[in-house]
Image (cartoon, rainbow, N blue to C red; front, side, top):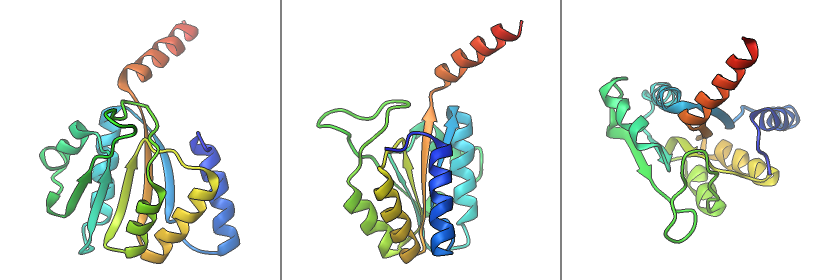
Length: 165
């Protein structure tokens, strides 16, 4: 499994060199809900000219609510789906989610969405290659956003600040 942004980018860069096509799959680490909200807005703005849906799978509700209120995003083309990780258990902040790869590949191949955004999902390298291929086929951007909770970011920041002083 791939756990870091650097590993994902290095492996996807190799995929792109071999196949000589655009990077349809991307993984990003996001620190805190404000940055997550900005990422959501940026994605919606990038795809607003297309007459397709932007699909969010397991989005952070607070960050999603800010799309229209703060960022002025037209949410009429935004779809949200919440998937449970295990029976009766939802993924929490920073917890990786194992999603049904077949369903995601199907959505990407159809091309009904301009982008599919997956929150805190985890995929094996071979699954990333498959998702990239399906995203290319459907001309659908696939983006995985892995969120570090605000409290974790604050703790890390405090530890780093203490080292400097």
